Amino acid sequence: MIIDSHTHVDRFGWYDPPETIIRLMDEAGVDQSIIMTYGDAPDVEGALEYIAEAVQKYPDRLIGYARMNPRRGEKAHRLFQKAMEVYGFKGLKLHPVGSLSHPGSRDTIEMIHLAARYGAPTLFHCGDEEYTLPLQIAQAAAACPEATIILGHAGGYFHVQDAIRVAERYPNVYLETSAMPYPRLIKEAVERVGASRVLYASDGPGCDLTIEIHKVRMAGLTPEEEEALFFRNIQRILSNVRTKEEGQ
Amino acid sequence: MIVDAHVFLGAGLFGYGQTLSEVCANMERLGIDKAILVPVKPRDYHLAPMNDLVADAVRQYPDRFLGLCRVDPWQGEAALAEVRRGFEELGACGLYLDPWEENFQVNDRIVFPLVEQAREYGKPVMVNAGHVRVSHPTQVGDLAARFPTVQFVACNGAQINICGILLFDARRMLEVCPNVVIETAGTYREDFLEEIMTEVGEDRVIFASRSPIYDQPFEMSRVRFAHLSDSQKEKMWGLNALRVFGGT
Image 1 (cartoon, chains in turn purple, green):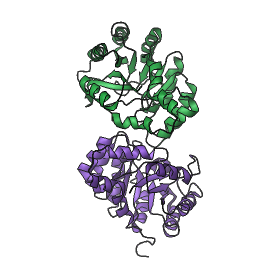
Image 2 (image 1 turned 135 degrees about the vertical axis):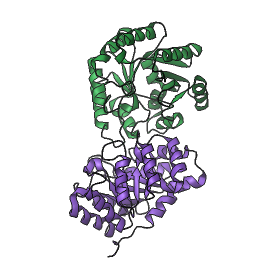
Image 3 (image 1 turned 180 degrees about the horizontal axis):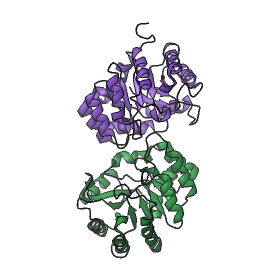
Image 4 (image 1 turned 45 degrees about the horizontal axis):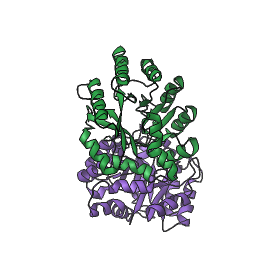
């Protein structure tokens, strides 16, 4: 069983209809993928609806995350609530390069708190660009201890060690393997933070799912550790997600 | 024929490196026929002895290796003399410039005399490209446009960025500068490599691992699993590199 924790479906800008990721999933033997757009709602009109339609079309294969611009405040909150309650989304995606919302800013923190009230994880783009560095996202992890924070790409090319340090410091932080090119650092991450807090993902369809799976298999993990990365951890995270906001 | 167009040799200042016997053992194990050896920057900062080390390896295994000559442009006349020694005495098949580790901007005027020297000898110039402060794809393009008769090899797909914001610049640079090819090593994303091969030119991408910075067996998977024809892959695996570096 393999669940890919970070893939893309979009019709705006980079055009990747759901059929593209489904084809690559079939090719790589991936059972389910978490999908999100490349652009932020509400800035990109219809973005969440496009994800909802894709999930509706392939309910056994695709799981939706809402990629949001936290700087849009109340409007973003209302849309996210609709995504969770009406569309059945399972998580929040934040890409601070796109939204220009610092991970430690009040807007971002409020957005993460909102997701956490649904038990939903927040997946950050976490690479080498300003606003996406692991030690910046650490501010969000510290401010939202009740939230599950996933460092997508685990720090990219130059910041993987920082990402591992952040995960060591904050028990609510997970590392996600997509696109970073170092199998040996997947092994190191598992050794330092435990296999229960590392997730397999591809960042497909741009990054090839087969290659990204190959990378995890090359890391020298035990079969149990591989299982944790490939599906058990994300299953456990998503099992906590609710369609109603806590206290509502 | 598999040619790894970028394999580092020597014990490096920055914590990476490998011996000749390690390089040979890995090539044997992975079925790599030839490699272009690149000197690391050593702990004593002196590049000339590393150029000797590479030349010795090429002399020892002339059927298996070609070697590049590495210089620091900040060394001025001494660098120029070392390039001449590399081409005339050491049999170097090209020049290696590392703006990241030697700390210069690749389109700075201190680089021009070295490239002029490569042009005079009809040798290609490999550039550690994609580092946004010193070898952004637009800076690589600026240098390549200044020397249109020199063949350049841009490492890292000419762009090191895990969110894709350099993809546009890297492709534009390749379209504008027909004298640049890119290496596959570490490249974000696989569909970028496929796009350059199919839409820009089948002679524009060469397999390289940049091992041991990147993982040699994992880097091979970028070509192995590419969605390209066998003849396109044959060019990536080795034919394009042999054309650029002059091997057989």
